[in-house]
Structure formats: structure tokens, C-alpha cells
Length: 224
Image (cartoon, rainbow, N blue to C red):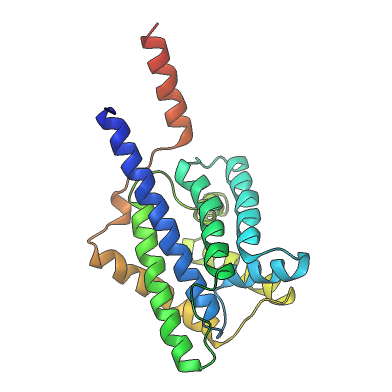
């Protein structure tokens, strides 16, 4: 029989991975709506077209680069950060390569699919952030730049997303009216999802990999 702490950790990991799968489904719904992508997805799509990889692989590759930047900037990395980097990209490819989410050709149906997709992103965010194993790499980069530039979070986030949007568009990513819809509505829709689950993101105390390493070191020392 497993120790209760181990069972609790297993529960958190399963919940986190379910969150990643729902989050990725939301992303694919916005992609397959065919009315324009979110800024980061414009960049991932442009990158995938330019170097001949899948959108999921592009997401994983950029996630790895950003995790390294987070580490260089001194931001703490959690198991959830690494899981976000890897699993969301894998789930994106799984949904897209198996045609599990329909592509739309009618604008208003695409808008509905985008809204549903953003709501799923909100639910997925709630599930994986609430386990307290670290946020996504891109959130970590935003926090690091806010600390170093001393600029408001809205300015920093807007600048980052503006840069990746332009870069992705130049690489051939799909920018459309849906891009504007996503930029304007993603915040309120995710906030609605959080309120639905009565989730206060500020109340989450994250555990990080270095914390686990220190705890393991203390346990080994005490068992000697």
C-alpha cells in the first residue's frame, strides 16, 4: 500500500496531466476554427511551416527555450513547468494528427468554437495551476521580465505577445479577426472559468524542483 503522501502526489500529477490535455484541446479548437490564432499559436504555426515540424513540436521547442531563459533569469522551475512544456505540445499533435477536433469553414461557427476553446483553456489552466507544481514557461518569462524591466505586467505581456504575433505572421502563421477576438476575450473567459470553480490563483503556493531536491536531501540525511 502506498504512503498517503505518494497517493496525494499521484493525484496531483494525474490532475495536472488532465489539465494539460484539456488546455491543448482548447488550443486546437481555436486553431481549427480557422478565423485566426492566438499570438503564441501564430508563432508556433509559422515556425512549423518554416522548418517543417508539427505545431506541437514547435510549441515544445519554444517551451524548452523559454524554460532555459527562465532558469537564466533566476525564475524557479516546477515539475508543472516542465510538464507544460512537454505535454501540451504532445496533446496538440495527438488531437490534430488524429483529426479529433473539427475544422470550420463558416465564420460564425468558428467564433463559437473559439469561445468554447478559450473556456477549455480556462478549465485546463485551473486544473494544472491549482495543483501547485509551477506555472507555464511563458508565464515565468513574463514574471522575469516584469522584475527586470520594472514595467507593468500588462505592458510586458502585451509586448511579448506583440513580438511573437508579428514574428509568427512573417513566418506564415494565420492572423485574422479571430486573433483579435482571442486577444480581447481570453482574459475574461479564463476569469469566468476560475470563478466557476471558485479558484483564486493568488492563493496557490507552488512547489518547485529545487524545493523537492532539498527535501530529498534532508530525508536522506535523516535516514543515515
